[in-house]
Image (cartoon, rainbow, N blue to C red; front, side):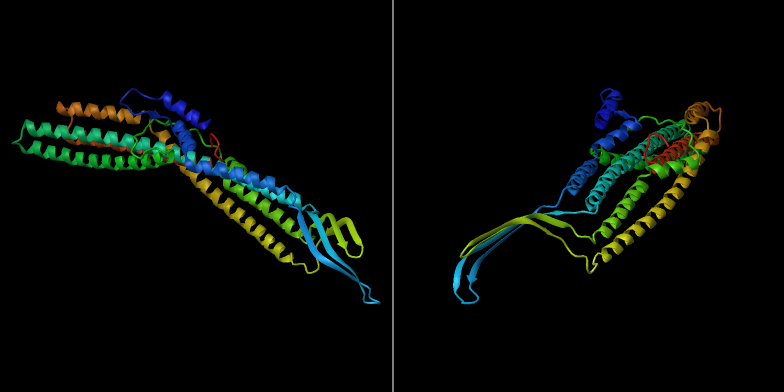
Length: 415
């Protein structure tokens, strides 16, 4: 189902021949989750855990014993041999665990199913969050690289015009050198942005199971993120839905059941079933009946197992406390980072990149007409690039914090 939705989303945004498809962030996340090969392994683990839970509810296999021998009958008074003959004995015993141990084993095995499902859900949430973060980083790097290449081309073009216009004067050469220096800086920014784009692209394609060089274009993510709930509400959601906490609670419950199972292990299982004894000497004897056997809890060797199970339970409680403290601290840090970046974006006009781009084009025309000085022109070109970088990088960092919060509270649609 997830793969079908991802394919539909990809088809909807498929452009004309020769162009790269623009993919939305959500469609990208769905495609990554559906195509990841590690997910199939975790799905298989759920099936294995379910098989283990079904087996845990079954009785132990019956035990069969067979004895062969020879019977000799003598008269103890006269010493006379009365007769010899074969002796045979057979019994089938079914071990039966009383005292509630079978339901405890089944509950512990069912906990493994819960842990497997939590592991799959956590993996899917983390994978989708990573895909969304990489998608926003990919868009930011692409926008930076495109703007930096445009600025560098504009600066180099204008530097060539100045030198061609009056090559003998000092002022054109100095202005051309200033423009070329600014172009070099812009080209370095473009190279760094291209490297960041490739790093995000290769990781995304690896997660999607696609060839690493396959180009990918991301639709513009919304600049206005949704407001974040109060931190106390987020903490409550994390307590109820955080995958790591849920897994540790499930493990702690299993460890508590393990303590009870170890305590009940002092009383052994009862093996019960029919038997037959057949002897043939001077006469033929046959005994058919019901046999029962169990262990006598004399030495209490199970005390060590109880101590080990109680130690594991105490360790699980300590791990849960430490994980809760760490997760809540990280949640507070991510929420503070989210709000700081959201407030910064709220102070900036929503159309700031477009306005600065238009101003940079206008400055180019004005400088060619002699209406603005060189310093203003260069400052406008580099200012557009710096402002665009600030907006897209802050937005990408904001969505990184949003995905971290989303995963911390259980991977829902919205934090």
